[in-house]
Amino acid sequence: MAQALFSVPLSYSLRNLWVRRLTTGLTAMGMALVVYVFAAVLMLDAGLKQTLVSTGEADNMVVTRQGSVTEVQSSIDRGQANIVTQFPEVATNLEALASRETVVLVNLKKRETGRPSNVVIRGLDHQGIKMRRQVQVIDGRLFRQGSNEIMVGQATAKQFANMTIGESVRFGGRDWRIVGHFDGGRSGFDNEIWADGEILRQSFRRTTYSSVIVRLMDPGQADVFRSRIEDDPRLPLKAKTERQYYEDQSETLSRFIRILGLTLTVIFSIGAVIGATITMQAAVATRINEIGTLRALGFQRSAILLAFLAESVFLALVGGGVGLAFASLMQLTEFSTTNFQSFSELSFGFYLTPGIVIQSLVFSVLMGVLGGMAPAIRASRIAIVEALRAA
Figure (spheres, rainbow, N blue to C red):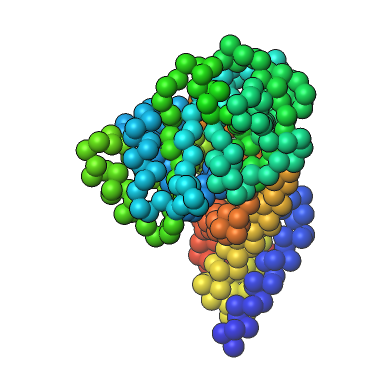
């Protein structure tokens, strides 16, 4: 009997959503907009982290100078680099699997706007390229060591002018000829240009390295390797796993995206909740006599409350589903901005995860509960005599 006393008003309320199609649709679209913004912000943040974290290899370590935030700010002399590469945790294959790299920023013109923006130029050798397993040459070839040849990441090739194979780009007082495009596997390397390290250091009059990348024999030795560097008085250096290093690079921009996006979401959600409340209040006002009839038939106040609350939650879930569907289409686009850590151009996409789907639907339910609670309580408190008299 108790089951029946709940199921009838629930099905009755859901049918009323269809009866009030216009109002239902407008309210659902308002909630869809909020969920779209909420999900898009989370997807943008996830895309940023996916791009930068996937840049790192699990068994690679990045060694930079203490106090430096990025490789651009770091400086490691040749003696320090030699010491680091001789530690027993470093894997070897006739020689230590290490890459002494130099990173500089240059200003190049963007393809569409012609405005200048910073691009990362990474100087390394072919061993450094091999240590990045996700990188593949998709057009052309590798640069020749000891030459003014460069390879361009595919995101940089799309964003900046004069990046076709065979063209030349001028920086560091030299003309550099493009001989290949590479795919970084949707990692941060897609936003870089790679050149021979020794020639790059000569061009920019550098005598030191920006970083040393080493491959560990066992990823589980990362803490041992880190402690060995920190405890060595000859080395004013620090070491992080490559994934942790690039995750830290995303932190400032990630925080900015979350704060700005979630602020907009809160503002929009207030409007959506108010809209849901107005919709449900109107539904209660037009169905007072029907509520009285249900109460006269024996339905409890709690059943009436839950039925109207379920109507509001279902309405929110419909809006949430629509908002998620539109947000998922954002995965077809890419976003380009300045990385606040490195001050270089960074392209990344929207990335939808199961966690974001769950968070968005939970957020929808929360809006439905907040928007429908007051009208549902009002409906449950209507006295039978008052309701029937209103008929």
